[in-house]
Image (tube, rainbow, N blue to C red; front, side, top):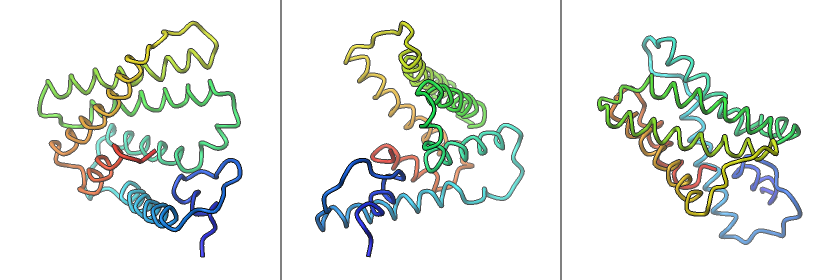
Length: 188
């Protein structure tokens, strides 16, 4: 029913690279289930917001999140044809704006939670900025393995704080929260 390449594309949201030997039954089943779950998450993200007025910042955040989803689904390919520095710079700009708007839009209900999120967002963005320096062949901060692991853990912690902040805010749908928690495991 599904070819291996089509199934891989449905799971990964990008075409497979290189030749792929036939997938065994358990792998095919896992990819099919994962593709269906990712499609359900996409529907939760793209569905219309709950009724009610959105302020200017919330509307901007929603549009930027739509742009991030569009990048993950489609825009990665045309942007991937450009130099790596263009891709990294656009990701840095997009996620800087999203992170700042998260800090402004979410009602954190705790200054400590907001401050922790701000620090973790800054650490996450510092990692992307370091990658941009590398892409531009400029001197970069040479991160050791321990610091690199810290950046990965900081990124995961930023996701956790964002979902906790959304939950405590009370205006985010259950589907959005579920998608946020699931992104910790395998979203991409």
